[in-house]
Every structure is written in structure tokens, then in C-alpha cells.
Image 1 (tube, rainbow, N blue to C red):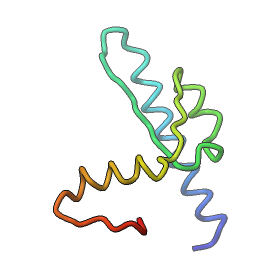
Image 2: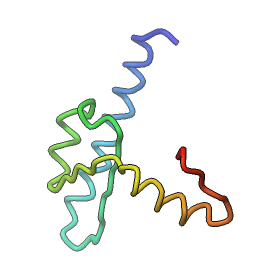
Image 3: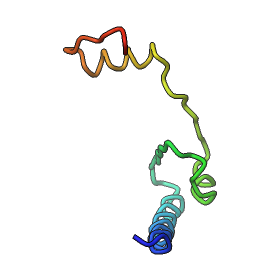
Amino acid sequence: MHPLLFLSSFSLILVKYLSLWDGLTTDDTAKVIVIGTTNQPRLLPDSILRRLPVQYEIDLPGKAEREAILRVVCPLFVLGDEM
């Protein structure tokens, strides 16, 4: 895909998304929570960041945290020391 075509498509999607998002904030009775996640926060446009009043940055898990995650997700697997 040509880079300009990708950027054009991305821009169209972003504009549509943001216009729909703005519609959520016009109804004071609406109870909507928008949760977003990305592994590339520095690439998010300012127009999206302005609409997220609260932002949390969560560090990658360390070795102990990864081991605990694997023990929960894969309880039947034997985890080796090289993990």
C-alpha cells in the first residue's frame, strides 16, 4: 500500500472516530466510559489525547510479574528456570 494512501485512510478513520466520540460528550445523561490502550502512546494524535482526561502509563512487567502471569494463564505448564 502506498504510504500516502495509508495516511489518507487513517485520517478519514480518525476524523470519523473523533466525531462519534464528540457525540458521546454532548449528552450529559449518557453513562459511557471510554478506555483506550496502546503500546505506542507517543504516536497518538493530540486530538485523541485531549479527549482522555485521565491517562495512566503502566510499565512492562518484570521477571517476577511475568512468571506470576504465566502461572495464572498456563497453570498446566511446567515453567523452567530459563524463563
